[in-house]
Image (spheres, rainbow, N blue to C red):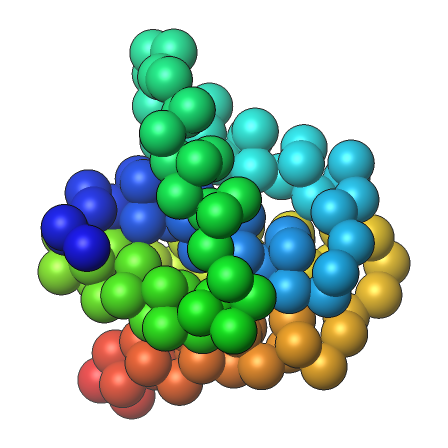
Length: 119
């Protein structure tokens, strides 16, 4: 798969986070819309991105999430990563329950990007 820009990588990560528990809650959708509004000042067509995510087998979520996480990291500043982590936490909490699957993906993000917090 080709490298994603940071906004698309963030979108992919949020979409996977919203689906790993097997349910997509409308409150999670609102967090994703807010992320896109903040990241994209203009309207963008996400049909191709939705096709990629909707046809992704569940067992490939973790690999795809990691690829997106690395793509985002390469193109982002520390502050952008902190801001994204806030979106990810808001999304996972949006439906008022954090499942073990959501927790696994969220921990992956925090552990992968955490070395910056030690400085």
